Image (cartoon, rainbow, N blue to C red):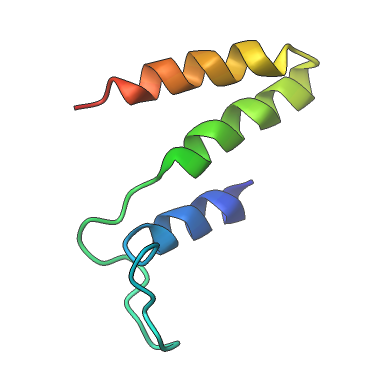
Length: 68
């Protein structure tokens, strides 16, 4: 889980502009979590708590879509 979130943050600034090499800065200015993390966290929570997937995903999506 932590690896997935770190990978999401590292890839956030390169998602649509491939770094093209392996010696890139993994956390340049502007790095942040993306919708991938926002939707992965509630899935993990639902699995761990045997909760309703759709409800948790909806709640997280609404909460994090309102960030300015």
